[in-house]
Structures are given as C-alpha cells and as structure tokens.
Amino acid sequence: MAQHSAKGHGAAEGHGHEVHGGGHTHGSFKSYTIGFLLSIVLTIIPLVVVLNGMLERTGTIVVLLVTAVLQFIVQLLFFMHLNEEEKPRYNLMTLILGLVIVLTIVLASMWIMAYNGVAH
Amino acid sequence: MAQASAGAHQGHEHGHDGHHDIESMRTFGFWIFLITDCILFGTLFAVYIVLHGNTNGGPTADELFAMPGIIASTFILLTSSYTSGLAVLSMNKGNVKGLIGWLIVTALLGASFIALEITEFVHMVHEGATIGTSAFLSSFYTLVGTHGLHVSLGLVWMVAIILQLSRRGITSVTKRKVNVISLYWHFLDVVWIFVFTIVYLMGVM
Image (cartoon, rainbow over the protein chains, first blue to last red):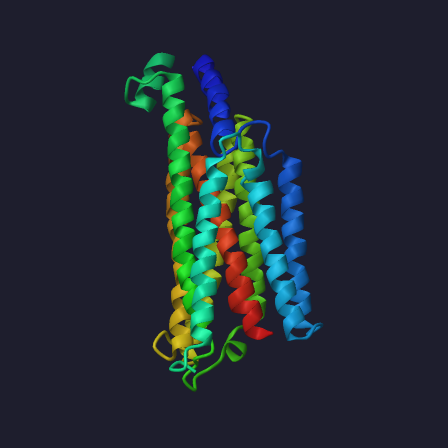
C-alpha cells in the first residue's frame, strides 16, 4: 500500500508538471503567502482610494482597473502556477483565447451602447 | 492489496502512465471549462456595465451598497483562495489530515461568504430593491447571483471531495479532483475581484 501510494504520488507530480503545473516544485508555502499578501495589498489600495475619494473620477477608474488586473495576474502566477507550465503551453493559449473573447464582448458592447440613441 | 486497491481506483486496464495521462487530460478539460465560464461571466459583466445607469427612478448603486459587508466578504473569499492553495500544498506533501483540514477551512470561509451575500440580498429586497425594480438591479442580481451560485455549487462539491478523501485517501484520482476544485476556487476569487471592482467600488465612487 505504501509502495503504491509512493509511486502514485511521484507519477501524479509528473502529471502536475505537464498540465496544470501543480507538482512538487510548484507552489511552496512561501509563494502562496507572497501571492496572498500581494492580493491583500492590491485590494486595500483601490479601497482606500475610493472610500477616501483621493483621486478624481478618471484617476480612480485607472487605479481600480490596474489593481484588479494586477491581482488577476498575481492569482494566475502565485496560485494557479500558470508560469510554470511546460511547453506546449495549452493552458496559456486557451486563457488568451478566452480573454480575447471576453474583452471583445465587454468592450464592443460598451462601444456599441455608447452610441445607441435609443437607450440614452 | 496494493494492486487490488490501485485497480479499484482506476477501474480500467490503463497502467500508471496511461492513467495519469488521462488525469492530466481531465485537468486540462476542466481548465477549458473554466475559460468558457469566463466567457459566461464576461457577457454578464457586459450587460451590467451597459445597464448599470438605468435605474428607472429606483435606488442607485451608491445608495444601495453597504460596503462594510462587501469588504468583509472580499477578504473572506481571498483568504479561502489562499487556504485552498494550502490544501494542495499539504496534498503534495502526502499529508491527508492537513489536506482535509485546509479544505474544511476553505469550505467554512466559502459558507460565510455565501451567508453574507444572502444577508445582503435579503436586506436589499426589504428596501424594495428587487430583481424587477430596474434594469440595473436585474443585471446586478444576475451577475452577483451567478457568482454566488458558483460558490454554493463549489461548496457542495468540496464537501463531497472531503468525504471521498476521508475514505480513499490521496490517490491519483482524488489528487486530480483536489487540483481541479482548487483551480475552480481560485477562478471564483478572480471573478469576485472584478465583481468587487466593477460593481461595488465603481458603484460607490
């Protein structure tokens, strides 16, 4: 039983390397903790800016979007270990395809509706 | 004994290598599902962004949102994303107790997130802000509610995995399941970052 689980363990780590990158060399306690602390900081910054009304409207929106995108990247790298994926990087490719579709849907909807004379 | 239990877990004649290829393909398949889920949330965000100004004379975002509760749920979900990562770490060290313990912590944090969200929704409905009040509220409840539904589903799923782990321990199959739900949980946190930013922070600024 011990033999089996030891073998299974090793092989499963190999699989982690290959696909989603969750094997033994990834995600040390340190890297998860750094990611967690960065996420907290990146949540507090926009909160402080908004609740204290520190910047004018455009500046606030820029700070909010930049910190949100940075936190997204922190989660991808420190929690999902996307940067440790081996080639060919199918996970990254599908993510980029998804992001292109999402951004097209969101930005194009905003653009179209901004010129919609019926709705406004 | 070892052979028999390995065979029982796998349920087919693949050897270790073939089996792990299948498990890795399943993890990748789940990743593709997450990307399509991103597109689902993308469309709901697009609808919310377009409609959030159409309040039909009803309450606006600024009047409705109670930030203390939202801030609390944000940090709760963020912490649960971290603890689900710690669960995976315990698993990679072969520590079943640690793994189950961190999963329970994650599930409890997820449950408190849902409790806070339900309290918020009930409070808003009592103030007369229902899903039918305005286009803004329809899109708000659909977007935030879909996220909440995902978290609730994740909770049920996580409890099932905890039960399975307590019976079978860490096998290549349960290992893949934990990896997958941890990915799912990080994904829900990512979606919440954007809900928090676009719906709540931009709503009250």
